[in-house]
Image 1: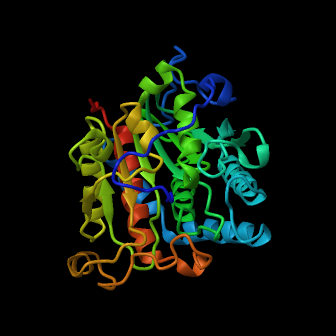
Image 2: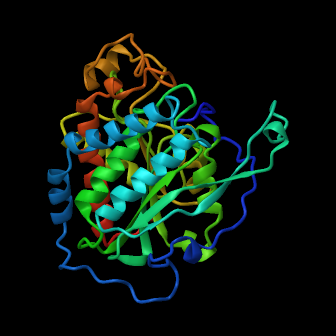
Length: 359
């Protein structure tokens, strides 16, 4: 979760060169290419995939990935910040897991702008740095209707970022490997692992701005996963709440948020609706793509009411290790993580199989 969080949409201060999706997703089906939609390997049965996927995922599988991200940080100065060897090793790990599960994987580049003293200049007089996002998608489903779920792959320099946002990365990997590369879906599913969220959502911004108009139009919705395993976590849902688009998202965001809230409720917890605060959903919102987000809170204190509905300790911060060196594997609350895993799996499966359209 970015240091630049605020209740107003953060300004996208960097310009990124356009990168054609067809070129970036080598070996993957290009959205908006005019090619026939891939067919599911089995008939789509309404509700069946959601039930199956929710039953398949679990915190044990996600914790395996979190342990590997911890090892990567340990080998690379205690963090996975971008740019750094730890970030590149994290991207390699995610790519390897997805390929082993049968996915084709692309690593489209984005341009990282490194600033000095807030002046917009690059550090040490260096020019821009190019870094990879990691993107994959199912071979099945209609490429003209794409459900995108994403999480940021980088940490802050101060720590390994196992909750922020290793928990989101591990959630996506667990869902992707359980879903498989050729599931019975109506709509294509795409997984995005974004770089440089902690310095202004630069990876996700570079990705969205690099898409063609047709490829952006093909995205049905975006679901952001940023911190879903904090020790005193709450159960927050973004999308459809707020007075303007930057806070609530464009039309259709409330519908996506409603489904995520319902799925969280089905796991036995009471979700709370909150506004967007400026994470990787920002470029998707700016592109008028219906968006929702899952997050469990960071440095703010949990209220007595929140503790009553979500459990945990009132008067204590949601994550005492937020953006610190102690955000390690020991900081993860597997109960919070498990609730979100099942809810996000159900939400993704719902939209992957729906015949409904969003505004």
